[in-house]
Length: 170
Ligand SMILES: [Zn+2]
Image 1 (cartoon, protein in one colour):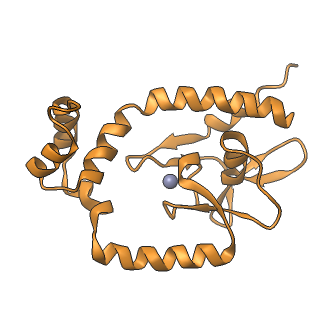
Image 2 (cartoon, helix red, strand yellow):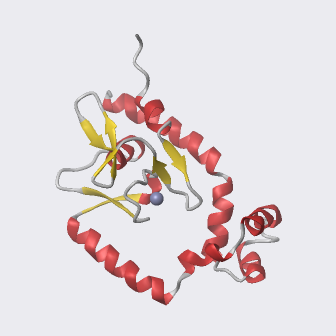
């Protein structure tokens, strides 16, 4: 029987959410996703990093910018140490009070989100205009618009991961 590509097995266990996270839906342990590679069980977010971004140096951890341990979205993963992780948490704790922009899109209904996507036109109805119209931050508008292209991005990521997989000889 022909072995199925790792990337294929990996992506079928992932469901995107409205924050752009890829949520791991298969088995988990200690709050993290589990994924089986030929040698042993690995944490799913670490496998994602290896597939989509690059090798993980010794002594480094793969950390989440979205703070969701079940997320395996490569854009939400970064390399750091335990110390970096603590510093990051600290900073985010403060920034929530300062700006609150990350949560700006929570004020919008799904209907408004769809409206914004329809209305958006680069240079005419850009982020700034829409952010004023809907009373949310530019970042929130940008996220909404970027989510629209999630499918295209995913195709490009998949292509990249397939190449990585060959390099890693998985
Ligand atoms: Zn995430």
